[in-house]
Image (cartoon, rainbow, N blue to C red; front, side):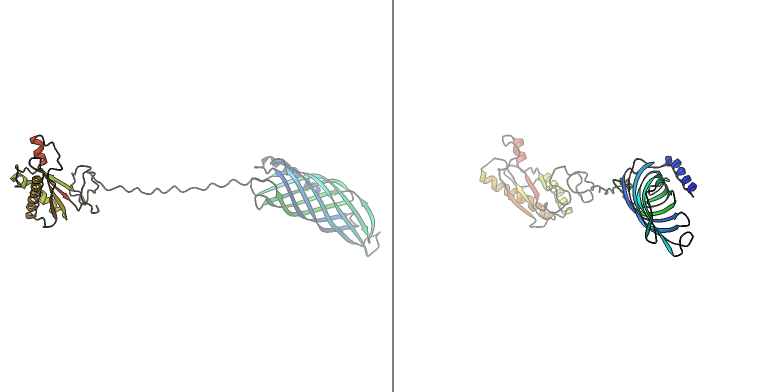
Length: 353
């Protein structure tokens, strides 16, 4: 048995060079110690349960040192063989310390590893027969062992090991099972979690508005309105200005003006015209009061013509601005002709587009 245990120690030492990542640092633990002790063969052969307190330091992935205190309890046996009288009782009490080197072979596992150990022990031993002490000594010598540890968390491991103590007058075998705490053991690297690709919301393409008047092409009934011009809900100009070439001191429409107003009336009817204003203007020829009255007659002339073309009465409010709002220079004939005008303005352009 001694040779078998020694072979395990040497085998683990040889394979320890294959160890994976080490767990360096201090450790401590407590184990239950189940012991079998044979003393002088015919005098004592018994088992007992005790405990082991241990601690140590792991230098690298191969090597550690450990010290321990053992208390094996009492070993008892009735004596039946000569020279002891029948009915006698022998008892041995053993405790003491060990120091060992540990060689590790983790077996390519992060959670499980095995080790071999070899070291030196120094025990106190008392032998009593029928309650009387017959021997007391302090044996010391070689201790060999092998064991394993299984990590149940980053810092805690379950540990099981077997040990043999070479005692001069007997053999002591132990099976130790306990818990171990490792100080400063690094946490395992977090397993990277695949991140789902961000969901990019589809960007809605704005409806087309070719002429840039704010009314989408699907609703725009005047698709060529100049950009920036005020338009109604159907995309048509809110301001309809016509150069009505009134003769001097008259509010009568020319044939050319009537053709232009026919087009205006058609557009207003098609665009569901609701309401608007017609404002007449004059040049500065004549008095201010006369020009005011003339501008009103010109506005009414345009409104009456449009009503005759289907624009409902009451939808157009006619008024005059006289000579107060020129758009050209009244010092020239050309400028005065431009100022003799009528402006049609829709008042329903504030409806939602």
